[in-house]
Length: 355
Image (cartoon, rainbow, N blue to C red; front, side, top):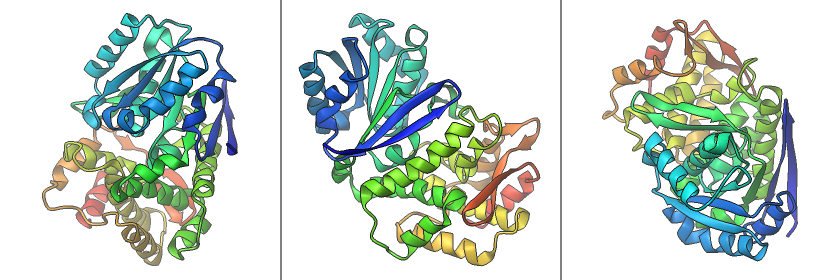
């Protein structure tokens, strides 16, 4: 099956992202081209096992691999240290060792969990991402960030561990309900806001875009940023956090009952309000962002049930809050972004109050 190949490389890492239709049925062949071992673990949630598990496992077996499938529960509750320990115990019991590899089959939660396990099992083994959601294909499967949640916040424990290969089968998206597709469009809109204003115009004007090409376009944006700053040192990678500082806080206050993309949507609206005050974004451009989010049925107003004061308290525990300052991504105009250290908690309070 023909696929698009996107190369991602940087300081000490290099891998390919394959995007196309029908790729899951060829996962074994694609992996065999790159790996000579035999034992591997497929980590997937219950939904992905039901939809795709047999397809991937059978093809791995056909190629001489000996996979063991480890099933986790869907949702953020699986992103815990206890869940990680259970997975590692099952891998040890199945005879996996430092020559083995992990296939993460699922959306963002599965990618975070399987990637973190890969980063620590025998001090690090290869990780292959097989994303099954739009959000994972355009964002979370790329870049090597892994992590789990703790009571204090989201992704506060984790590691940088780049995948060795990403296999994005666009046919998997046909199984997604509209709500799941919306989560991916939140990240697509984010990429447009920080780097590609033309893509925002295409989305707004309903220009027909091939799904695979749209995914590749977004992967290329993230790949470029990650290649320049894969460990978020220089500040370039921080641009990908646009909308996420407030979005993650909303997600935590909502006890992870709101989907990630919807929380990011609200976070982006708030970040645009901050950008009007601190970076010169025009009110007209804010209206364009709000209209585009609404077009894809993403929320732009905060539910009354979410307490705004708790959002601010949660932000103080964010990874991006350093020495009393917060690294906040602002946009002076659509398609351009930078990190500001001038944003204050009062700015954030005012922006949240406008949601």
